[in-house]
Length: 398
Picture (cartoon, rainbow, N blue to C red):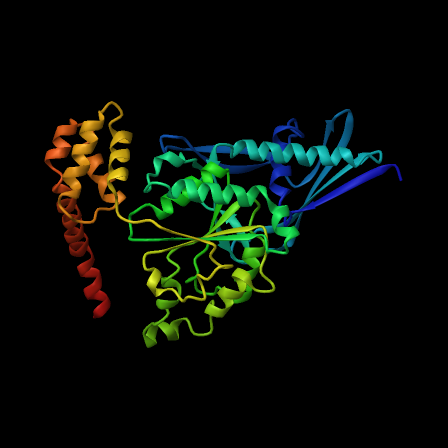
């Protein structure tokens, strides 16, 4: 009657937060330790190894806000993940008194520490089994103005998504499902994925990358993953057109994966706006070929906003030029744009960026006089990639 206990199983989302909090704020003086190795990525891309000593399995004591707390970390033989082999663990906190607020303060403090570590960064998640896990290192947020799209596109999408996030009650009052779908379509290399990454950074959201072509991804698992996506995340379905077209495989490939579950088209539609579909969700889809998509997939309710991200316009070329050559004048930007468009050939943002990177230490006049190299570089890269791939293709054919 005079003690209060809090049990936190490793399945709970706050488990890792609590362990980290115990390390930095709680049982810092304990002599029974286990090591947790992590990697910290700097702005330069250099990765530094970091070792954290956390309280090992057993019993520990520490004092928090004038109250002594006993920490028991237990580990069972059973596992919760057959692939990773992670043991089932539980942390139990026991203290004198009946003040539940004490534990709430600890958990909230642990959450704030975890948020601070990822502040200014974008966390990428991938689906592992029935849950989402962070993928790689949190990335430094990409500025939204670093992705130059045609006039008005960025503003329209940002305005729409901010209005959606800030007005959940508007949807509830009118009985409209609180979810939003976006489709970005257009040629490859024009900035669809880059824009979504920058948008997530602008909104301080993470990104859940979902591969619909993954072997073993069933309709039920897809629905479950959408329902348990981390808060404040964008769900990204890239190259949605290839998810079902690519399923026309050879007999040998089909036999190799026979028996594995696959996502069906009807299953995807039901996950997006069926009876069991989740709310408070933002989904972005990308495709290079919108004409390949079934009209049922992109009808209103499943896709609310469609934006075409096409080849570079004069506005985009000039804005990208200003980002690389910050001291250049308007006249140079207009001349470069006119010189590129005079070739009457489509050019992507990736091509323009590659060209600017090639001449990043050159004067603007050199860029203007050598614009034909934009397409020459692209053709050379294609020839090199074919040369490298041809031996592999011949082996597969044999």
